[in-house]
Length: 173
Image (tube, rainbow, N blue to C red; front, side):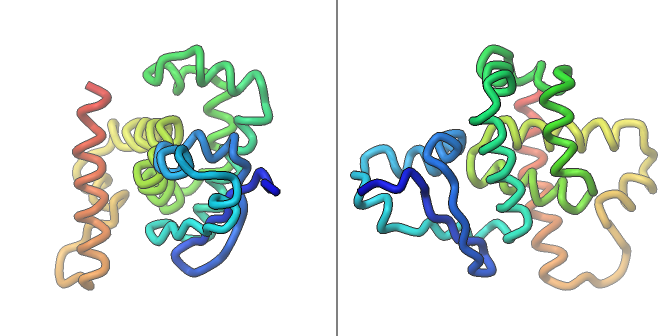
């Protein structure tokens, strides 16, 4: 019997569930479950090894909220992505969950990895809005760029963020 829920696991191994309607907001999950039977879906746990538990929980809450709230769902469906940041209802729902800088970067990565266009685009737009008036030193501080030796993990994170940001930047042009 189909549970109507999809099982997810974060990179730390924390399990959680997302409704099928909310999962369909993710291009990654939608593509994965499209050709599976209910029994196959119920038997699988999707390992999202790129996303930490806190971020995954917030992404799931955001998707569930937008699936259950008809007004928000219609705004996302009826509005072009470039106008999402101008819709206060969408911005408030986004900022309620994703407020600090570190969480914003993690959210941007999660939106990219899971192919959730509204989350990806809102995070990108928020980052752009926050840095556009900053000088070089402020931007370096915002992105955590320091001189001297960095750990390989820090270098990898910065490289990943740069590549995601560079690739996504062109979608706004």
